[in-house]
Length: 598
Image (tube, rainbow, N blue to C red; front, top):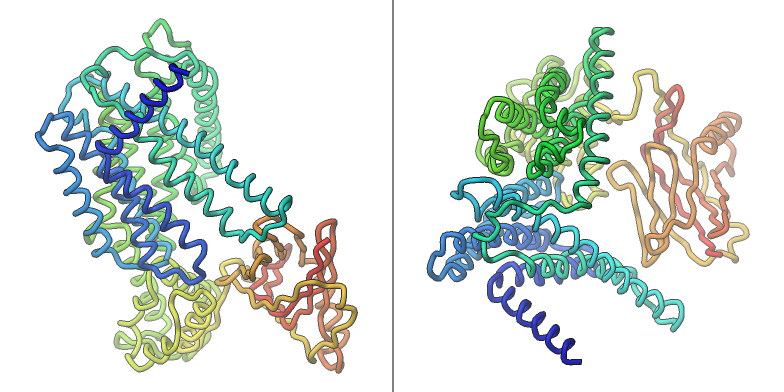
């Protein structure tokens, strides 16, 4: 009992010490977790809530990094100064950053998070010579990271099991939001608090030669490095293939090369403390030649990237891929040429390249938007749709590829930026007319805004899935159906699904349209009830509609489906799809369904 009391007292002191040392990260973690949980219970969460959430999350690594930097320099009142700076950064980010829900908003915030996380990893050793302390510190961070996720996982499972017992054993109605909230609280609030408790204080002690753990030795030398070398060999087989066929690399090859590079850099970092005689032969080969072997693959990355940019312009993804390629070339040349081969250069250079790509006129967002607007203008001017800087109606039919490209650029700009980017290309009255009574945060209205813009140009929307020889077909019911045999069904749900708004949910039932494999999936509390393939049904329905010539008085489309979990009867009002040679891509579905849970 005395031992337990002593242990409890030690844990309490550690907890108290951690809070006094990292008060801002603690407060940010707790506030962010409660804010994230709150968003689960509010259907239309204001965008300012997401802005506040990101500001708090970004403030955590910044505050940790600044605190540890000041501690390492033994600055007086370091915790107070770090707290003031952290509050200023968090507040500035919240006030300066636009509250948006597009993809670019999330990517930009993740980029800032990467900058501060990289800074946190080297902050206490910024001016210290040698690599031992830096390696030991980051190994501790790695341990805390893994342990935090394991403990958070078990905590979230405990919450979920408790909620399931209340729901199914005690028969208490539990909203599905509580399940997601338990995950968010565990992996944001508890995770971060547990992580910071174990952060080291005495940085001088870390400057000793690392004690290399046996489990890490086995993992790196016997598993990850052989896998990395195999991955490298496969990339060289692909490189040989494109050289012999004299073809350009596929667009996705860039991300594969980047993934290989990052994996290799991680292996190099963890190999650093091992003595030469402790390393296996393939690890010695890896350490000597990995960066040299990576350079031809990076050249392939740039060739593939150039071909995509030349054809389709710059997007955020291509910009970040290019920036990561530049960073990887620098890392390769540094470790090939440099005699010191200091591993601290990895996070320092990463934070610098992330900073350069996140802000200013050379940022990913600004460069990508400028490139896509330029491509958009070029196509419109070529087809005399853009005259004197303003959009007008197309006077002739344009090519399939160009019409598809126009649709793709509009989709991209709406998804990653803001429809207001088109304001300079439209007469003010037309622009205001398109946006009148439209909510740009409502996905269901985005397709209407897009179609209105295309109508101004006398063009049609062409899905990215549609092939040149594909036929766009719409099946539409000619009369309101007479509902038959529906007494057995428990739930009724109307739906209007499309590419921009592919899911719909009520209190506990969710419908999801999967355009790529042409299916409807029903969920109950995020657990799949039934998956309904639609390709064969649509082809049969098309054949039936051709036989009826859309003239029969009672022609309407009904689909019955069932499995061990549910029985479903769907009445389709319309099915809009593209029929390609070997596939069907669904643009939109409209109708209503009856659902019986078994």
